[in-house]
Structures are given as structure tokens and as C-alpha cells.
Length: 224
Image (cartoon, rainbow, N blue to C red; front, side):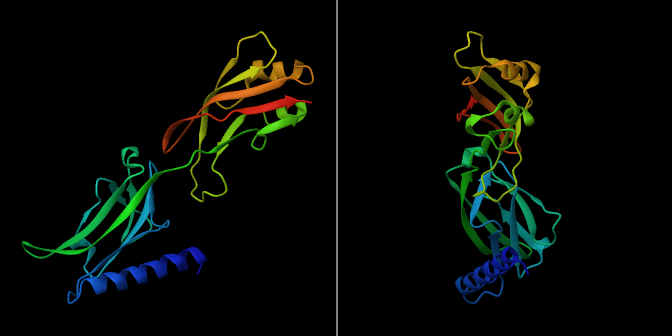
């Protein structure tokens, strides 16, 4: 068993124990576990597991303003989607069941914080963020990329929509690039730029399943 699955299993067991205690004499319970810690991230699918002593066909789940769909991973697994409007707030997921016709029993509820996913880190060529760089290193991978930092373990993939390239001490207007690739104009400018030229990549626009984002961070490179 992997550490992640072991942690999730322990969380399920603890939550079911607590909810059983709260239920006192009731024999009907439900446990709600967010598979990624106790945080829901806005704009992306959040795996949630619901374990209940009642068959799932009898459950009524109130997602607290979020939307949910059954996951392909199996019984009791859901993907929950929370809108950006709930970021920095929270939702309460409640579970009840109709055990007899007209008789609704509350099985449990849990409150979860909602956060926006952090902005990714932007690079030139996948690993250049700043500093002095030779022309061949800059042009070896002629594109701008964005990827999540190592401290965020959810696989959110970003695509670069556009950005601006400015050559300092150059009278020409900044070059607007559509897509992630430099294009011929930026490549030619870098090839012909004298040593010491400062190249600034800014106004980077990106998109992912979480929506579009504007990156305020600039990539500043000096050609050596």
C-alpha cells in the first residue's frame, strides 16, 4: 500500500469513528473524505470519497454550492468542482438518506476550505527564469512554458496563450507573440542582438482546466 493510499484509509477510518460517536445510538452513518488533504481547489476536479452504512442509491448529497459527478475510480468516489467565486471561502458537504418513505435521516456533514490553485512558474525553454544566458542556451528550446511549483502536487497543466518580448535599449516596439513558440521575429532578434542585451518576457497569458490567468512575473535575461 502506498503512503498516499494508507493516509487516505486512516483518514476514512478516523472520520467514520468520529461520526459514529456523534451519531450516538444511530446505526446509520456516512463519512466524507477529501482525498487531497482537507482543501478543495476552485476550478479543478477534487476527488472526494463518501463511505456510508447506507446503500449509495438511498443517499442524498448536498454539495454546498459545488457541482459533483461520479468518478470512474469506483463506488463512493466523486469529482467535485467548486467555482472561483467560492475561493477563500468554504462549503459544507452534507449527506442524508431516505430510509423509509418520507423519513429523511441526517448521516453527517463536513466543512471544507476552498482555495484558488497557486499560479505556476514561468520559464523560457522550460528551465531559464533569469540571469545571464548565451544565445545558444536561449534558442535551444525557443518557447515560453508554465508549470506548477514542486510544492504543489496536483497535476495541473498550463498552456501559454501569448506574451510580450522587449529588447532593452532597442527602439523597436515590443514583439507580441501568440502561442508559446518564439517565432521567426523573436529568434532573429536574439541571434542578432549584441552581447549585454537585456531581453524581457512579460504580459504572459496562460490557460488550464482552472481557466485563464495573467502572470505578472517577468522573465529577464541578459545575453552573454
